[in-house]
Length: 231
Ligand code: HEC
Ligand code: HEC
Image (tube, rainbow, N blue to C red; front, side):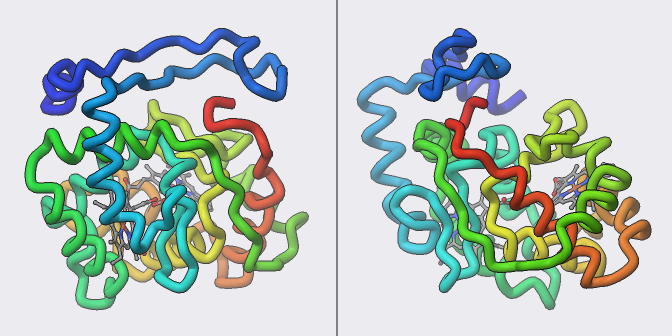
C-alpha cells in the first residue's frame, strides 16, 4: 500500500506503450512505462549517483564490485529487494557478505519517498547488455530451465510479476549463479516471512549440482536480446 501512496505523491504516471513504439519496430507486448517530473528526475539522478559508485553510471553492474545490473530489472522487484535489505529479510546472514554491503547502502535511502524516486530513475535508464562469464552446457541448461524455472520466471525468462518472480534477462550470470547458491545454501530466503525466497529454495531441490546451475545460467544468457527494456 505504501508505494501506491508514494507513487501518487511523486505523480508517477503509468502509461501504456503502443505496440509499434519499440525502437526496433517489433510488435512486442505492451508494458507500462514511467514518467517523472523534471524535479523528481533530477532528484532521482542525484541519489542514483551514490549508487553508481558500485552499480555503474548506466546501472549496468560492475563485476569488480559484484554488483548486478539494475537497469534491466523491473521496478517492483527493485522496490521489494531494497525493502528486504532494509527490513532484515535479505543480507543479514553471517555468510552473506555481499548482501551485507547492500544493507549498509540501502540505509542511504532515508525515506520511502527517496527509495521510490531512485528506483523510478533507474527504471527510466535504457537497457544494457551484460557480458557472458559462465560458459556451461546451454542444451542441458535449457532442459532444466524449461522443466524447473520457466513455470515461475516465464519460458522467455522475462519474469512473471504475478508470482513475484523477477526478470532474469540481462542480469549478470555470475550474480545469478551466486544468488542461486545463496538460496540453496540457506544464505538467502530463510528469514521468516520471506515467502518468495522460500519458493526459490523449494524448487532448487530439483537442481542436482553446481554444474547444472552453471548450465541453466548459460542458457538464460542465450535468451538475452538487444531489445529495449519494455520488450
Ligand atoms: C558499495 C557498493 C554498492 C553501492 C554504493 C550500492 N550497491 Fe546495490 N548492490 C551492491 C552489491 C554488491 C549487490 C549484490 C548483493 C548480493 O550479491 O546479494 C547489490 C544489490 C542491489 C540490489 C539487488 C538487485 C537484485 O537483482 O536482487 C538492488 C535493488 C540494489 N543493489 C540497489 C542499489 C541502490 C538503489 C543503491 C543506491 C541507493 C545501491 N544499490 C548502492 C553494491 C552496492
Ligand atoms: C516456484 C517459483 C519459482 C521457480 C520454479 C524458480 N524461481 Fe527463481 N525466483 C522466484 C521468486 C519468487 C524469486 C524472488 C525471490 C525474492 O523475492 O527474494 C526468485 C528469484 C530468483 C533469482 C534472484 C534474482 C535477483 O536478481 O535477485 C534468480 C537468479 C532466480 N530466481 C533464478 C531461478 C532459476 C535459474 C530457476 C530454475 C532453476 C528458478 N529461479 C526457479 C520464483 C521461482
